[in-house]
Length: 213
Image (tube, rainbow, N blue to C red; front, side):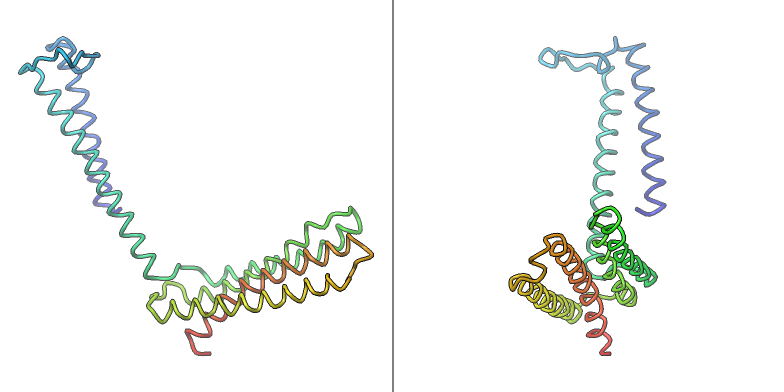
């Protein structure tokens, strides 16, 4: 919503409130509080004195309709824009990938407290991919861009599924079979790193296909 539209909405809203207050006062003083207090519409008979309140009601209805139209118009315009351009992301978000090193704290928490959940932090390594996404911020999503995006995601998923197959195969042949805890740690670390790799590759490959590097 533009500043001009915002001012119009506010100005019209204040005007409607003022007219409503004036209409209520008029009805209470000169029209026996009709259209203010509850009325039996089945026995309603039109009176000229009802015109001010009817006009106020019509203006409020028009105002609500106007605000609704403005809202949906801006919403659809924004969605249309988002569908044609890639999202704007700062390359500096890629620095969040350093939080992936927190995953190594899982070895300390495991030996000290028997907790293995910190290994999940390895997923943050995938945030390094935001560095490449930032380089493609607000890029026109034409047919070539969408095709490269699908190609990048498919290739990233292929790598992820191959690595996941290797992890499952290692577990199937009995790796860490004598220690269930180490088995759980191995699976948690592996899945976290694979997930991070897929996120990173999706952005990196898209950047590589778009820039031809």
